[in-house]
Image (cartoon, rainbow, N blue to C red):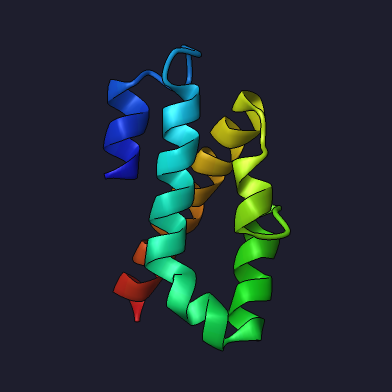
Amino acid sequence: MLYDKYERWEIGNDERNAESFRLFLVSLIRNTFGKIVAKNAGFRDKLFSMLKISGFEDLKSKNTDETRWIAVLFFDIFEFWHKALKQL
């Protein structure tokens, strides 16, 4: 869903939907990982470290270029994780 929005809204090349995408990214990550982050400090630290953020609020405050970079990083992490799980 995130990748679809990134592509359809042309986030990589266009500023028009950057704020909406940033809020969508924060919501998606918070809704997907929020409960785990709240219960597991180790997971929280690793997730935030991988995304180079200090927390969900930090992600909200990123500029457009930083948001693009975090989204692409998230895509790469997800792809790696998905491929690694297939190998097991």
